[in-house]
Image (cartoon, rainbow, N blue to C red; front, side, top):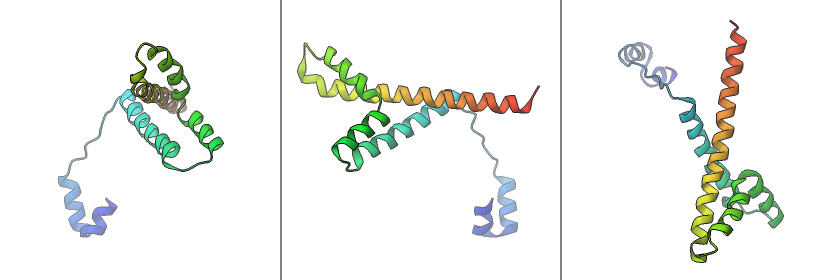
Length: 124
């Protein structure tokens, strides 16, 4: 509404607001958590791989922001014993999948906690 007022004045903005129907997105909590998880994974990857850190700092950021890396390394060692040439693909696939699942669980729990707290505050 403020953007419309700045763009075309008060009368035209009112006319536009009357003719444009607002579409509200009714997304499930899983959909919201999946979008947030993808965004958090992208931000974590940019922080870990996009900025130059010292060696010890890089390990710290890697373990904290991409917790799937620890599990991906262990699982990929087991999976790639017969075929060692696919190790990079398996490792990176597992890293992304496990970290995405981790961020999804954290986001979903945060959304559910928010919903529970907001419903609790309203009362019966």
